Image (cartoon, rainbow, N blue to C red; front, side, top):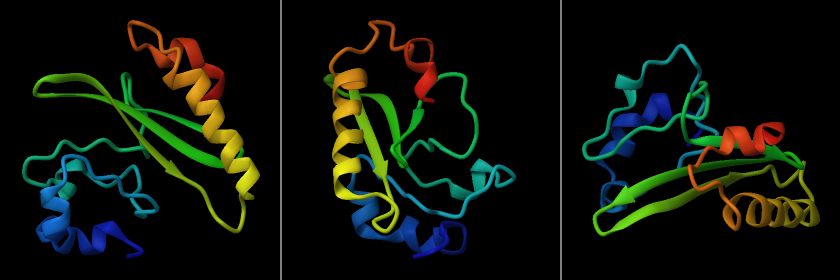
Length: 126
């Protein structure tokens, strides 16, 4: 599917989308002038990567690999890290993807700031 805003009703009704606790959509053709209400789905909170946020989710681009990290709380399980990763197969060799994943692992996931202020700690990667 090339455009989420053209197919949001189909996606919102899809059983696999409704059954999931977390859904990540990439290459959706959203733009900053699109309003959040156009993408409302029952029982889901929208995090957009195409607009600036004052607090999470946080995004990085490392080796042409786009990475988004959101911290969510679920019943009985706080501070769950949800990571969305996108890279173009034609633009990013597999070795560069591995480097980006190692960077994510060692700088973001293994040593996060206790206050979860990723922008302060990792602002040069944003």
